[in-house]
Length: 349
Image 1 (cartoon, one colour):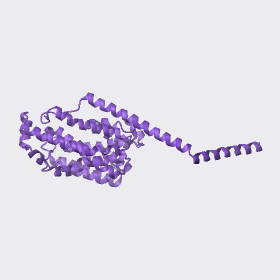
Image 2 (tube, helix red, strand yellow):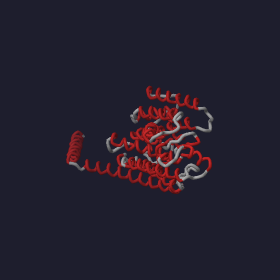
Image 3 (cartoon, one colour):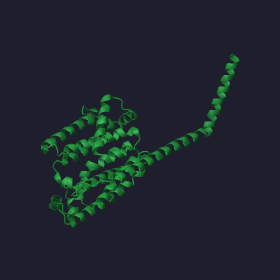
Image 4 (cartoon, helix red, strand yellow):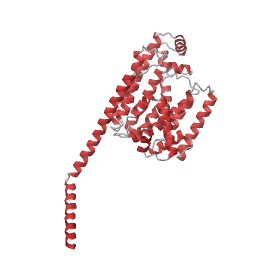
């Protein structure tokens, strides 16, 4: 499948093909939900998505790799080195680092605003020192770089039927909705990393603070105040999904099934959190495999339908043009020219 994707994208350079393949593996290993959805995109656009998400996953690994035992200073050094490679690559159009090379190529191919990548790296660096957020507004500033810009990076790859600037706020909201979903699902794991992403004002409104969350995580005991705060967090996230959903119809029809599938799978995580009694401090929830398969199949059916509609419109447009008076005159003139030529050939012969 990788070779087919690369061929369809017109990527022929061996080093660049290797770079994109590496990004695809990163996306497949870390982003199972979105990797599944990406397979519903037109084959020629998939490599670009793997480059964008592969780079994001790699940067995130540097920040969150608990297994390495690397000190914060070492992680900062690694992240700063990646940021420097990115900035040089964006400026020069090339990089010796494969993941950066694929990203730079995608950015050039789709004319993606370089500021989106700079903002992303700024949020990754802040993760090394910022461990909580006093208000949702503070969290939103972080999420602009860590999530909203991912949606904005994707927009040129997906394509739109509306002006891009009109679709952009909805694309940004979708990135934020996905990240808020991750924050709710991963409350316990983030605590283990010393972070609380749920804003303090939302938690305190329900009598919750970091100490209570830590107590629940360590003891395995539930607390109604924590449940109440998580209910509010789910409600907030659903509101962001509603903002994002308004933009789905603005996407290129052949790209919509991919994003609709990711939208549904991620939103279903909220349902899984609710169904599990909001016990995210004690275990990680996921969407059932049967449900994921059903959504994937539905997405594939929408892909087929979208492609058939595009072909039908193209065929109808061609037939309409062929049947127009201008086309008829052109055909008549061509036919007359052929008769005249034939007559001249006969006279010569």
